Amino acid sequence: MKLLKKITHITQALLIPCCLLTSCNYLDVIPPAQADFDDTMKDEAATLSFLYTCYGYVPRCQVYDFKAYELSADEVIFPKDWDMYGQQMAWGTISPSYYKVWSGSQTSDDFNIWTPSYNWIGYVHHFLSLIDELQPTGVTEEDKAQYKAECYFLEAYYHFRVLQAFGPCPIIPEKVDPNITNEEIPGRSHFDYCVDWIVQKLDDAAAVLPAVRETADLGRATSTIAKCLKARVLLYAASPLWNGSFPT
Image 1 (tube, rainbow, N blue to C red):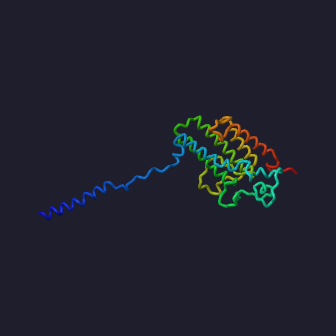
Image 2 (image 1 turned 90 degrees about the vertical axis):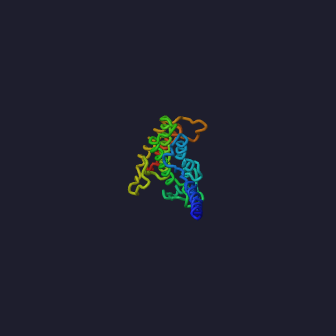
Image 3 (image 1 turned 30 degrees about the horizontal axis):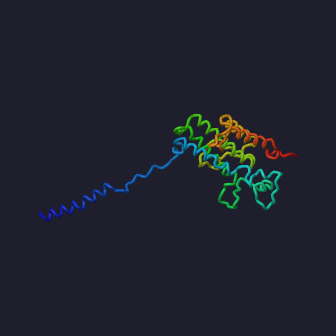
């Protein structure tokens, strides 16, 4: 009888802690939810953050960069060995596959035009594909119209940079599948078509955007800058030095 009691006590002493440990396993933690595409526009702040990302390549291809293509004009002369973008334009050694940057590294394309421009066009189209679908909290229809107009300006700007550097280029008018094959990628459009497409985008943007921005929004597109860029596009289109109709 005493032996049975001892066995019972020992059994209880072993089972009770085991049950407690099983019910209080601190390793059974539910992982936090992972962010997905819906979170990119869950509210006004997130939507603006996404929109500002679409501007990401503008500072890297501004016209006053030391290696800017504008420096290929007659006002500036580069020695052949300098290997600047302006020199490459003058000597005809630039191509869309060129990746060399200021540091000489082959691993970065920050100062390239072709690849980054189309990458950021992709960001712009991704934003446009989600803004109406996700209905972000706190974003009004007027806000959406403004954001879309900014995207139209950026579409025009990035395409113009490619057109300016390489002439007739592929026009990407909407979001494409990231797994698109080489055969499905649009070919180069006619120079005049590229110009007309870019100008139309700038007109669409200028019709909605404000002429000036408040201090907190400086750097965002305006109707004024859209019209200025349109003037530059049309100037290039009228110039035999840029439109392909070289004088004889």
